[in-house]
Length: 423
Image: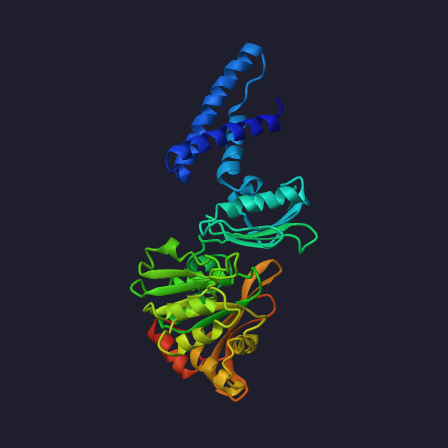
């Protein structure tokens, strides 16, 4: 019997056992794994006896471990994707049909790996299997529902497409929940000690902060670290499209919290809950701070109102290519809320709501803070701001211009002491 035939037989045996057990009683993941291991252990004992009598070479311990892992991945995990999800060095996974797989690594490099499926249809089946296990209910993935957006059990985000692309494709973004503090980000080279002190004081001083950057630049990681500087007694409500911030993973730091997630419409087109809906709901939940995982539409307006009406210390991320570009993005998003407000009023709302804007990007495979800007005021169609940290060449962001006295005073009150004395 070939290795593939043996693996298929083991998957069938273990799968049949799970069906029998689930017919009799509820089975959680731990119980299911225990049942699978019991079935496989019995099989390996029987197979060893059969091979001894037939004079065939025995399976090694490594063979048994590999086969067990393959069966567990197939029945409880994501099959051939699971080994990539389990690799701590991999941060992003790109699968295009039966073509070679591309992955991004923690050091920013990319690597080409062998295909994980033998046909596009097999990739579709893999996505459907993952969708059927979604904690938010089974999701469709077919010609009428060509995209699938899932949050996996480990917090990774899976997005898949079919029919509108030349071949089915899948992208998984893994989140590094172990990077949860500013000091840890300093050890990776993202922050200097000056920036660590500045951000820690800004979070404690309840400054409203917007973090901008491109896809995969590290916005969520920095936001998570800033959140973990919030005092333990404060109540936080997070608003997300997918559970990426992992607030519940740090429940000892944030015991009083609620985590809200948007919801797409059902098959009949009803039941959609947007980020804008959630933002309005969050304001009724007595939050000290509202955190929006990613702003990209009409939710910007209620978020800005929340920031300017007593929920200081709120934070969000958005896609923008500089700190200055954030203001135009926010104004465009507010216009999507159909407020009818003229641009000078929108800018006044932004200036009253946002205190600090941060830009982060990947340069030569390494993440870095390129700019930190203080919002000062609004002047008609223009936001008046002050770039207090700026990155020069390829180095880290350093102090560029003095901050206003108001910001300096409030940050110094919360422990920040600048390394530069301005004349």
